[in-house]
View 1: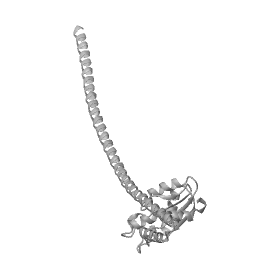
View 2: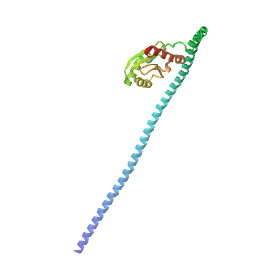
View 3: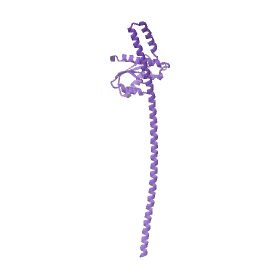
View 4: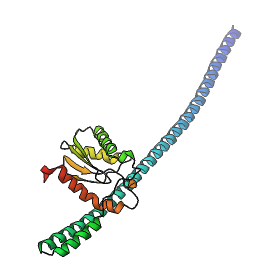
Length: 241
């Protein structure tokens, strides 16, 4: 009987030890699996972080390029505006001098000054023979209509002064719509908006880029442009005078 108890106790001890050992092995396997899982998680997080950083860097590079392009465009527009303002001031001075001479009865001097002014402004530039249709009368009207559509505005009237190159555009819009249309004009591919003469609902302007001007005509066109726009506006909106 004593031997039997001994065997039973021994068997129970062996069974208990086996269970403990089996559980130990299972726990060791779980610990190993958990460590592998943590390592894989860390590796994946690092990959995600690197991919996100690369995406942010690429997005930043694209934005930087866009901003640099916009800065270049604005510098060009500012330069042309500064040059135009200086030329306008000179033209105004010439006109005032001409009026002063006329008032004092100096007809001969007035005639000479008029000739000098006409020589300074230069003759109107004719459209080039190979003019891109985009800058023809129909092409410009189509571009304005497209810009108005994108801006969500309705134009009451669109007119074109095609007496000389580049052609000028005149539009009549609802009060408050001009700024929306102008924003679209500034972003239109293939066209350049560099200012206008007008008010909240009537404006005259050009969107023909200077790159398509006939060679050697930039200065003449620049000198004539503002005066042409003012004359066109005065004719286009007589009620505003």
